[in-house]
Length: 346
Ligand SMILES: [Zn+2]
Image 1 (tube, rainbow, N blue to C red):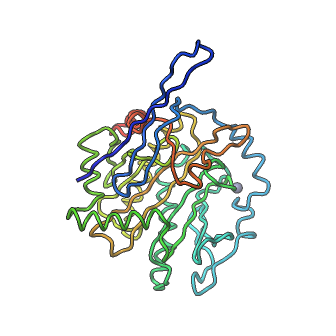
Image 2 (cartoon, protein in one colour):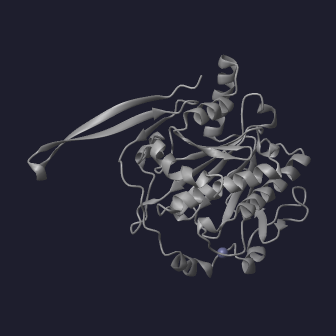
């Protein structure tokens, strides 16, 4: 039902320093088993990076931070009363307000803490679950209004500058849209095709397949299954969390949110050992009616600078214009590094 396809390649070079000795460098092109999207496993290196001086990053950016508690309510905009009569949503030390740089008509930003900076392992599972639940509260309000954009309810997390964040202060991007982003749309179409052709739900088959093979399966946290992607987009692999019984964000219960927070915490603890301190995390949600062929999942993708001093991004022409991705280790090897963090007794 699930078939994995890869093409092995080999590059032959002559080394002038060693009397033109032949050097062979392997690489592999993999295809995502759902969409067929290709991903290259190449540029093999040890997954080890230098952590930046987070205290210096904090002190340089705090004075003008729009999301710090002393400024956030004076600077950030409010929703009009027909969307949110109170203008912004608040919960404990978190606040949700409109995105000043919107890419759709209903977009919000939610701060995740009062503190300006935190290493990713400082987030407790409960804090992540509470931030996701604040986003859910916004989504529930839009749905109650029967808003035309209340179709796909998406949460993105760009954490730290390598991941594309221009504000250090921890925050989520929260948006509801009737226009699914490219990959969400492609996954939904492919999942529907899989159901039509195979009579089964791809995401359930994927979990079964990976759990039986064990090469990329990391573990189960409540009703969420954590798997290394076979064809990752990130240079240090991607982790997918598939939720057993939800098709869309609005199907997630508070237990699901806590399971997601607990799993994310384990993933972050594992990656921090390699010097990774930055990531993207996206919700991949269907519509409410997509439950007979789709399952909600999130993807966690570590980000890094290829050159910390120059601020060289890990996304170049290959990814930006061909949407062809590079991963610098075999996902199965990265899974071996992450799996101990999913042991029950941790
Ligand atoms: Zn701040």
